[in-house]
Image (cartoon, rainbow over all chains, first blue to last red; front, side, top):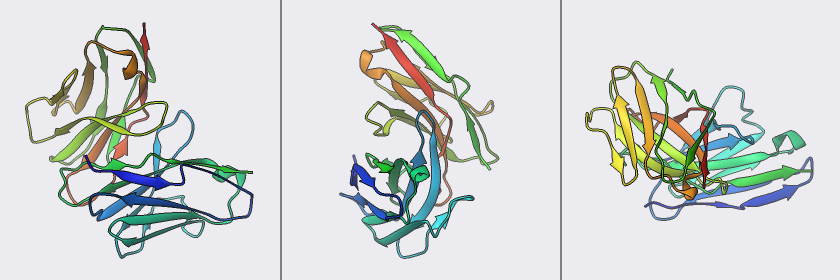
Length: 116
Length: 115
C-alpha cells in the first residue's frame, strides 16, 4: 500500500516559537493532502485541505494565520504552527490521496506536539 | 453536509468471539465510499475495510466484514474470531465520490478484547 511519512514524530517547543511538521507521500503523487488534529480519546478533526500548488482551504474555526499550510509539491505538504501556545499541544495527523485512487486516504503516523 | 454516527463509545468482546460495531450516516448523495479505520495505541490509522456505495455486495477482509444497508444508511462492522490485537479505537468514515473531499469521521468506538 501507499506510504505517508510525517516528521517529526514528536516535538516539544517553547511557547511563542514556531514549529514545522512535514508530511510526505513516499511512493505516490498526492494531489490532495489533509491535516487533522486529534485530542485524547476523541475523533479526528479536519483542520484544512491542501491541493498541490494552491492555497489551503481551512475549516471553520481554524486560524489560517496560526496554522500555515504549504503544499509545494505533489509529495510534500507542511504545517507550521506559528507562535505556539500550550493549547496548541495536540496530535496532528496528515493524510494524502491521489485523484482516482478509489477514495482511500493514506495516513501518516502523526506528530505529537507539546508546547511548554 | 454529511454526518457519521457511532452510537457505541465502548465495546468489549471475549477473545475468539464475534463483535459488531454500529455506524449510521446521513447523506443526500447516491454514490460514495464508506470505511472502517482502526487506530491502535500507536495512533497510526489503519484501513480495515472499504465499501463502495454502488456495490450491493458487502465487503469482506478476512475476519472483518460489513453489513451495508444503503436504504437504512447503516454500515456495521463485524469482527469474527476476535484477537487481542484487535483492541483499538475504530472509526467509521464517509467520503464523497465527487472530487477530492476529506473523510467525515464518526466519534469512534473503543474496542476491548478480553483474554
